[in-house]
Image 1: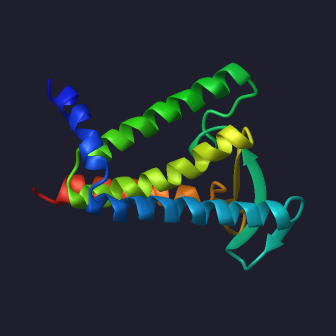
Image 2: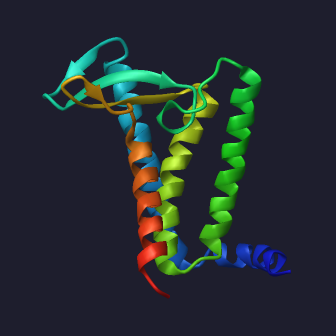
Length: 166
């Protein structure tokens, strides 16, 4: 019954002043991601750009989820995963509305990044990844700004879950 009560209360909690700051964080992360991706798509579509011995800019189009997992050529599977990501985003918003202040910051970081990648899945049918970290012949997964925020948010969530007592 608590779930339904929380859903009824959510519209009342939507417009409280405190949420304005969290929504601003979500929008800032989303726009930072959009800006970085649009600049990379415009300027680095065909070329790899060497920065130093550890990082390159190299645009690849990821049709899977994080780090290229679940990549497939099946449009049914791609659409199913996209739908699943949309449902997870809705769940994250629910958790956002029913959480405390510090947790709202964590959810805002994750949601901002997830919205950036979700937008790309809907608009481009793939997510542009472009940060290529490497050391000699070892290359880490290519990623983008949204992935950085999603990973950061999840790490903070895990650390908070294990080490912070309420």
